[in-house]
Amino acid sequence: MLHIDQKEVLATNTMIEKENLDVRTITLGISLFDCAEGDLSTRCRKIYDKITSKAENLVRVGEEISREFGIPIVNKRISVTPIAMIGAGVCRVPEDYVEIARALDRAAGTVGVNFLGGYSALVEKGMSQADRLLIESIPDALSETGVICSSVCVGSTRAGINMDAVHLMGEVIRRTAEKTKEQDSLGCAKLVVFCNAPDDNPFMAGAFHGVTMQDEVVNVGVSGPGVVKTAIESVRGQSFDVLCETIKKTAFQVTRVGQLVATEAARRLEVPFGIVDLSLAPTPAIGDSVADILCEIGLSEAGAPGTTAALALLNDQVKKGGLMASSSVGGLSGAFIPVSEDQGMISAARSGALCIEKLEAMTSVCSVGLDMIAIPGNTSAATISGIIADEMAIGMINGKTTAARLIPVIGKGVGDEATFGGLLGTAPIMPVSKASCEAFVSRTGRIPAPVNSFRN
Image (cartoon, rainbow, N blue to C red):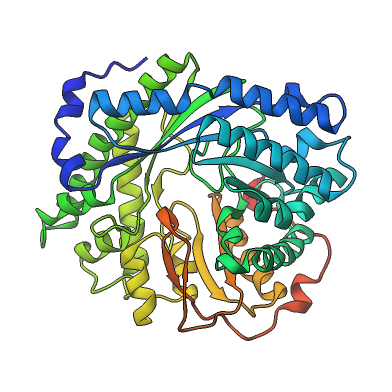
């Protein structure tokens, strides 16, 4: 195990106090495969009992580490085995899966975590009956629970894109928006559609406990957009070589903080340490913005010509620096570009400098994809499916993780704003193309895997 001296963390005091450095989340992954027996009520009881037993000390340990090392730990979260698998064979209708969602929500409330992820299905090559039932249950599950997050992986470089699932997800997102319309369609902020979903992602809404992983694991997500921005302010106007070295060195320091917290959390919880996810995940707070980093690199605002190149540079240097600081970097490490959670992105979207089409181009080089984007409430299910398909294609062809977290805000249109609260922030409603893709997304079957998938 990598040894980290606490002195290394003390050197980051300025980052923590003035530059918004934090550990965004400690996420405890828990396998629920041993709960997949008996009838529905038995499984719900087993799920509740296992989570409340395994995670009973998670919040306390996180708070202890935060106090002792002076490192803010914003969230304590849980990820579980994709629930479509755990309910298979006993869930006969969507409401049966909703019953499991309620049990998960009760367990999360008992242990006091911020979010629980894993109300998920992995359907990139096809949907089982269990997968379909879980997907159809998502609107009710997210509207009737408080902290449950859901994800569906509909594509991968190896399998191609399951267009039946993409079509269905457009309808599910619409229904979820309707079910939670009194909260600006908040349910959709807890639902993400993936291509190439990683098994070890600690960030919501896409976290789940991968089926190839051990029974329990601790994954930590660290974030420091403000730290990176401050560092590159000191090299303003200098060459790209100097800029890149500065970002790498800063990412190294930030990742060492995550390594310390992850090691300590694993030791105290007596659970294996998984990965550190170094993702520049912004918040609505001033000074904690990826868009502001892009501006410091030399853009007038996010969305200006050169934005994709600047983001590519940032993402790559963050990964290079992080990889030198830990032997266990994983998850989604890189730069997030969620609109509602980044004050700079919000400003750029309000001014018109940033549109969905530009964001889509940026997702080819960022850490995730079209994230926390509010769109008009009258956007059709087919259009939502088309946007998802485009994003999945970027991930499939490029062999990277991409995702779509789209929020059709019922009752609102372009020029309005949606408010989600907390880290989820506020988002201007962004326009979408009015051209139809219904005939395309209505085709059944699967877009085949690309030729670059055949690598054995």
